[in-house]
Image (cartoon, rainbow over all chains, first blue to last red; front, side):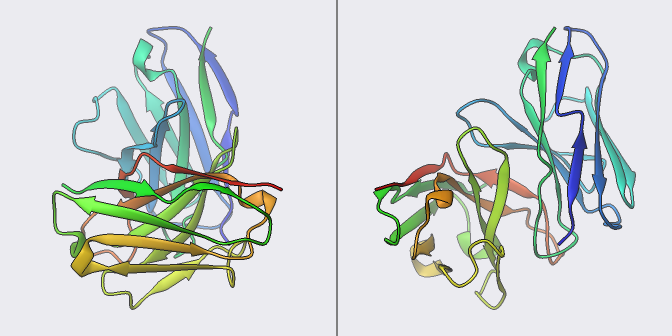
Length: 107
Length: 122
């Protein structure tokens, strides 16, 4: 199975900060990567698909980049609503593995 | 756009069985590949199983292979997960999720239900 590793596990930031989360795949997944946001007690919400495509309705401060084995999610100016946990997920194979998550906390 | 509502969770003893359901509304359920994803308390997301539009392709995570069975009834707009031989480590919130409708074999999960809690404990 393809392993997905996110870093950091926890990130402390302030409103207005630029935030970057990294996701690495154990083998090439081309651009078949998604990013999700999850808030406590809620289902995940799709932010980015195909590594860099913004899902409809998602604010433009979210962006994704990368291909092959290394990917990033960037929040250009962190807003109060963005404090949450973020997961990457590969869908290159039938086994749609997730990263372990990155919690974005208030500094 | 489809809306998804899970049901069937609850408390079950180790070795027991449970059947989860996911009811879809608002769009053409039969157009979506469907998945189950779970999240143990305080832990991350784990993909469990997927089923294609006409049930021709079915996949399972190694952790549930041989114990869980995914199925769907397009006439009833419903997805199911039959869970047998349950273990304590199966305790989690179980979400159903649909994939984006594209020409891809696999795709991202754009619609999620609210989840149903399964607790396996004696």
